[in-house]
Image (cartoon, rainbow, N blue to C red; front, side, top):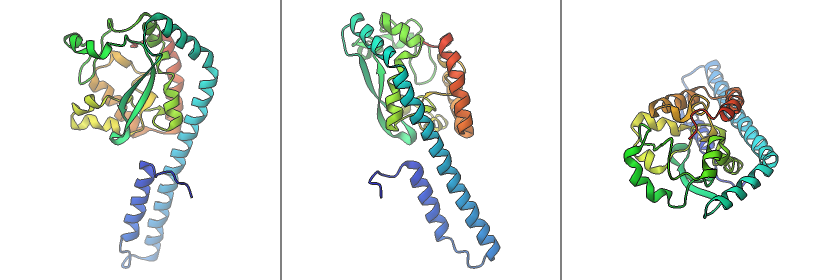
Length: 247
């Protein structure tokens, strides 16, 4: 038996099984009881199969990508080190599925005093809602502008995918202070494992306002499937190459 703690999805399945087990079906006919049981088994198997296939896709693609892009990762690390003082990588606390906190990894694209300067630039925020975006953010380094435009700064998050903190496809993980400002309906973004790319990323990225972000994320959550993930991954390639909405 595995010593690993149950995932949130496994807990939901266990709770559902326990709920059905406590139901009193003594007054229900045999055929109806059998129908209930078969539907429950089919539902549980469907959830587990979908989760397993998604996780298999995540591990396979992210592992292969780390190998294929290893020369690019090394060159990026060297460029960052030569361009400005500070660490190569940037780790930040983000909010995952159902409010779970985890540390996200990125290539550093800003100067080391970026967080301190953010307050000074608050009045120049070009985004709506609880997020901060500037097309010409002075905190971004020369190398940072290039790697952000091409989404290279996100590549270290493949490690997060391998660890299970993130998926290849899903809503982008927000900052805890952003979540604190969410309205109730906006918290639906937290009903899925966060991703490196997603429906919002292939539909305009930072050119969208926050309510549009939420709408795209909710659409993904309601329609997510393995095939939907594959289509979004394929759409991510031209979105990255054109750099539309990336800053």
